Length: 298
Image (cartoon, rainbow, N blue to C red; front, side):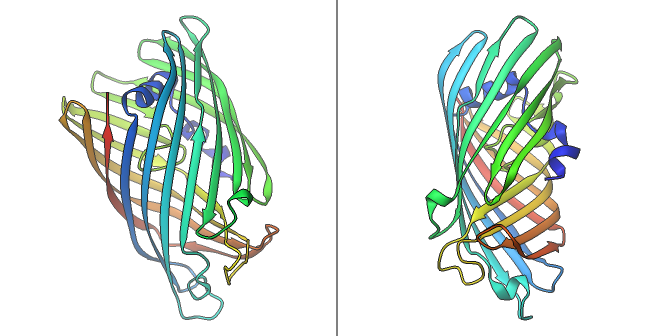
């Protein structure tokens, strides 16, 4: 939760970039693999993930935009460890599902100011867990000011409920800065191959090729299943700070294909009981990851 306060500029895209992403890319899929990395207690963990996202504009007029978005992600965790009581020996969770629905709204007050609100509903649960006990909600809201044709900045706030934990409230700052014709600094909406708040340096290499370099904060907190032997109906949590590079190609007018690779830093794993009380918490070494994605644009 601390990173939500120390990295407030990594929260959300400015309105123009966000609305263009939803309206032009209604469907995207991707796969990511993270090889085995050491946990501080001597055990190991590796992951692989698959996601699919979709967006449907409900209102798209000059200065007004409302859409329905959804994203599903499946992540498989593989723990290894022989020391009794270690994370790997506990084998705390296996397959985790994350389903998120959003309703982003952007509304121009005038030529300079734009209001935004992004309410969302999420389900995060281990395979076999009670879905009704896995529901969380969040709201991002604020405004952006267009200082020039190349720069918009705005303040905002976020509110998020958490499974078996207190409500999280945090400030956000939105930035969209076109440094040159081919280079910009922006944030990306949740739904890309890296979920969570992030900032990206975007470099248009040619009309059909784009490079990106970014940093994000990922936090996955989910309900465990009733048969889970480590913590029946408890809570699992995995957080990290990924740094990555991506290369996107445009083989046709409507298809974008990309590859990406990076390293996750500040990895932390936590296991809690059904009341949210800590059972075990461990840090893990920096972990490389790589993958590919595909999106349709219209």
